[in-house]
Length: 559
View 1 (cartoon, rainbow, N blue to C red):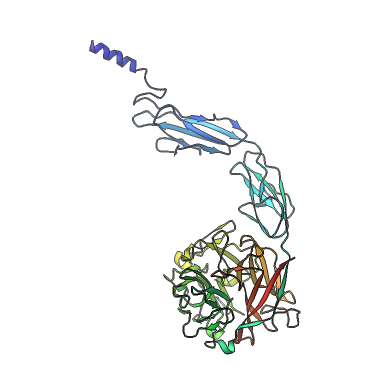
View 2 (cartoon, rainbow, N blue to C red):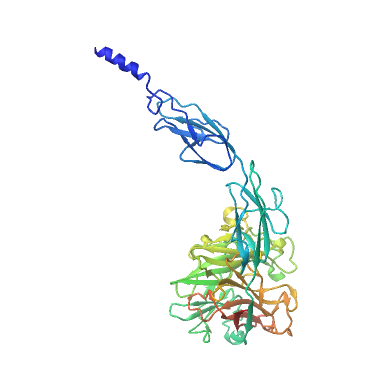
């Protein structure tokens, strides 16, 4: 009787399996696609399942055959935005692997016309325009010259488009197997705030004839102020190799501190040390830490084409980091040469000939550091990637979320702050150069202007000569896209002479290194400016060492 029962049970079990039950040794049920493979006019999200509980599914989309070891393990819906064939197999330990399921999805339709953000309209000032479309994977081309874009005409959209002045953007989107979208058109009218500028009388802040600590103690960079913990002011406007600062209880009592230089240049003889001739160029205090950008210059004193007998014609520039923990009295460079912020992109190679003027390359002269309303720290800097072609130059924007790590800064790469600036001596290869800002006037002084609600950039600008030479400002919403420049005052510059008789000229002599500072800023780092500010600049009295730091009051009025 027991033997008969076992035979009956065995016979009944022959029909077991499939339908999600099954025993080891039987085949796993084939994968099922949902929605079913066919032609669709919109992108789909495809799920794959099997009725065999606990089975694993692998799939491919490249035409190859999946197996227990080949293909992607299925873990969730597969986005299908263009035509493709999905092949899938299911397997489980102790079971026979399923047969391969194959499903062809044909996705077709019309690509959505590109959308603009912000929408077309009138703005003040410059805007960054972003384009988007559906389905995912579609390509956008655009034009700004009035021509009609197509699948072969126009610039492939890769990131925000700068609308620094009035422009009409036309865009089209396309995807293989789909009908190309209609052309979208957006007109942006950029109306910069019309700002009237009133300039007051000159006042000498540092007089070289009476205030210097040594003959080479000259104001050789834009003036920067930091408020110390005890409320006193520290003025940074010195010179390498021995850099002195001024201190005072207010803006009218500043005195040079000659008994303790804030920074003495290391003056090392190798470019890869990044410790050569060093200027404190921008300082930003957070608590007891005074973070500084250092403008570093390596002077090649041994190569035949750069020797001192030729007048020190070769400069290899980089931006490095220093920090003070004693109230800005002395600065040190932690972990040098890893203190580098923006190293020159190429390793130093002496020029093959004696330059007619000078040969310079690298990143140099960073602007003041500004903390934006978004919480990030921003700065601008000059760039000349290659001394053999110094006509290729521009302004770079960099950003960081912390100041104590020099490697945290990222440069604008055309679509975002994504580019890490690396040392060719560390990597063994030349580095990628930042993307130059399309409409920047320079990088001397950066602030966030609370009166206008915009970033403000001040620089000595224009080439050639005449009344257009002078000190200008420009405005931006994002530090990257800058509006048209507006003059603060005409000036005599080394490369652009307005002439001493020009009405309103700042000085009858050459000036350099402008910076804008608001004495009414109650913050620590004077990175905010308002309606009433001071323009600081260096006045070259004799074309040599006799230089004064001068300031004039400036008032902005929106008309």
